[in-house]
Each structure stands twice: as C-alpha cells, then as structure tokens.
Amino acid sequence: MLTPSLKSDIHQLWNTFRSWGISNPLTAIEQISYLIFMKRLDDLDRQNIMKAKKVSNFSYQSIFQWKEELRRSYWMQLPAEEMLSHVRDIVFPFVKTLQTGDWFSGTLSDATFLIPKASLLVTAVTIIENLHISEQNEDTSWDIYEYLINEIATAGKNWQFRTPRHIIQSIIELVNPTKNDVICDPACGTAWFLINTYKRIIKQNSSKDAIFEDESWTHYPWDLLNEKDWKKLKSDTLQGFDFDTTMVRIANMNEIMHGVTKPNIAYKDTLGKWFSHESVYDVILANPPFKWSIDKWDLNPDFTLDTKKTELLFLELIYHKLRIWWRCAVIVPDWVLFGSSNAHKKIRELLVEQSDLKAVISLPSWVFKPYAGVSTAVLIFTKGDDTQKVWFYDLQADWYSLDDKRNPISDNDLPDLIEKYKKFVDARLYNKQPEKWEKRFRVDKKEIKEYKYDLSISKYKKIEYVPVEYEKPKVLIKQIKEIEKKINDELLKIEEML
Image (cartoon, rainbow, N blue to C red):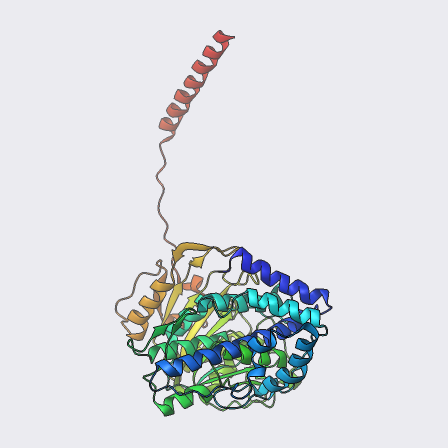
C-alpha cells in the first residue's frame, strides 16, 4: 500500500506527461516504463555484481562492461539538453538491441522514444528518482509500478483491469507450479501471474543458508537449481502472450524489473486463426478478458463453441493448450457459471466431463474495485482426469474492504481457503465433507449434471433458516401498556413543572 507522499509523486509524474501533450495513458505508461526500466537495469546490474561476490555458484558479467556511459547513474548527471540527446540517441538504441548475457529485451526493437523536450525528461527522471524504487522493499517497488499501470484502467483505456496481487499469489499457491512445469498465461497483460510464479519457484529452490538481505529486499539465490534447471527457468518455463504490442513491451520490461532477465512474452492473438491449439503446457494461469466479442472470421477453426464471447473462447483455448493430466486456474465472470446459452452449457460440460473440475472458488464481487465491480470465480481443473466431486468455496473476505478504497481490514478467508484446499482437494478427502450451508462444501458430479452443469455456488449452497420465536399477543399488549404508563407519568411530571 503506497503512502500519500508516493501517490502524490506518481500523480505529479502523470501530470508532467499530460502537460507535454502525452495524454494517452497507454503511451505515457510506456514512456515512463522505459525510464524506470533504464533505472532498474542499472540497479539490477549492480545487485548481480554484489550477488556474484556473495554466492559461490553465481557468476555474472556486467551488461555495462566497458560501457559505463550507458548507466543511468552516469547520464543523470548530464546537463538537460545533453541528457536528452544522450538518452534518445545512445542509451535507448542500446536498450532496444540488448540481447547479451543474461539480459534480453528483443521485443523493444520497434519501441519509440517519444519524450520531446529536455525539461520533460529531467522532470520525469527526477520524480522517478524521488520514488526510490530500488531502495524500497520489493513489495513497495511493485506497488509503485502497479499503481502506474493501473492508470490505464482508471482512464478507461485499453480495458486493462489488474488482478490483485494477493489473489494472484493465492491462486498460484493452490495450483503449485514447479521448476519442471512449462507455464503459460495466454492473455498475460502486464505479466503479474508469470512474475509471481517465477518468484515462488525461486523461493522454493533457495536454501535457507544462502538467502541474504541488503538495503533493498531479501534475495533468494536459487542455489538448489542446477545449471539445466536455471537455463530452462530463464528461457522456457514462463511463457505469455498478448494481442497488444504495447502491453507486450510493458510486460517484458515488467518481468525484467522483477528478476526475469530473459522474458518469453510474445505478441499473439491467441483466439485468432494463426495461433496453434496444440497441447504444450503443463500449467496455465490466467485472468483473460471478458465482455468482449470477436468476429467469427478471425476465429481459429479449431474452436468448437459457437460463440463470439471471449470469456468462453478462452476457456476452450486453455483446455486445448493444456497437456493431458495437467492443471489450470482461470478467473471467469460469474455468468460463465450459470449462463443458459448452448455455448455456456457446452463449455461447462467440457470441464466436468473431460476434466477433473477440482474447485469453483467464488470471489467477493468487489475484489477488482475500484476498476470493476463484476462478480467472478476461480475455476481449477485438470485436463483429462475424471470429475468425481466439485469443491465449492465461498470467499467472503480477502483482507481488504469491499469498496472503492480497498483499505486493509482484519477479515481474510484466503489462508483458510489455501489450507482447506490442500487438505480436502489435493488430498482427496471426499468423506470429510462439511454441510452445504458452510462456506466450503463438495457436490457430487451426478447432482451437477442434474442441474445441467450449473456451477454457481448459490445453486447448491443451503440456506440455514433459524426459527424466530415471538411473544404471545397478550404479553406484547401488556408490555405496550406498561410503556404507555411510563410515558404518561413522565408527561405529568413535566406538566407540573410548567
């Protein structure tokens, strides 16, 4: 959660770009991202140099070797006009073509540096310096960048709605991706699912003795990964796609700024004709766009659903892209769970009959506030396995107030969700089933089929009626007369005083 001071600095940064005519939030965030990216390249390079000195099995060659003039710490000291020409003509072309050592940013090859005036550049880099991105702990650094990205949503541009970090982390905990998996987000946006997955794998493969801290944050040096594991994690494990070239560039920079130095995020219309439906992924994590419609002419012919609704098409795509016996977690709007069209029924039947639909987790309707108020749910399933029972969980609190402010509160069902999922779903303890009026319960596949594969939690959750006992009319009349007598006595006392 950002302090008012940091939020004020970020708004000042936005206003600076707007005042110079860069009013499109997507363009502004891209230009700001370039400047933050240059700063993080310098910071991460220095951190890796330090890490190489402290961790015995970690070797590193600086990307600025023999090129110190490309460091942000160098050009920040230049006079304004010289800084602009140096960054525009020397530093930015270097960043666009950076493909050496552990670093890769090939998707910036078509990027354009649009900052027109030296005064705008100086003001922007000064504000970014004041944000102390490298000196904050990692969560605060994330908050700063996330807050910038969220401006796209608040301005109503590009329909970019973030998935809250704690929801992402909880979903990843449930699905439990490992270093051996090939993991994909087919509509990755700014890549938060992939970044969190990377960080979890790094933590899982760092021994306690090797973890160290500096003034920035805790470092997990992945010392339990062998060379083959590490190479795979950097290049093949995490794959993402988006159909907006600007978002692809932002996602790649975002990954690099959070430690994924060789991001594998590409521009693809994953619903389109030219995207393969071949089953190649072990884990898929996604919050794909919904309320969109796509022209049937553009659709891949491998789709079997007769619909143009993206929320349904992405579900079928995810099913196709998963390898047999592997798993997925996807966020869907509630109407996917109970929609009455043939396409709605067909996709739900696919998940129940040709997968093991492990869980339907109902999220609070305001979990995406202040950007969207739609009700959503998380579907977790394994392709090709057999559904026996579906585990429902009614998540009623997520640690934040369910309003536009989303302030921290004490109520939080997420730890219970994770604990009970691992206990009852992963362990398949089918016999220990709570009653349906609790927040979690199981439903037999047979019952779900009887309701035409309706997956809304309200369809199965029982309402517990508590009988209310009322007093007999004679008793109530007596009580009313006693109250009237007291009122009259008080009125008489007031009258005597007058």
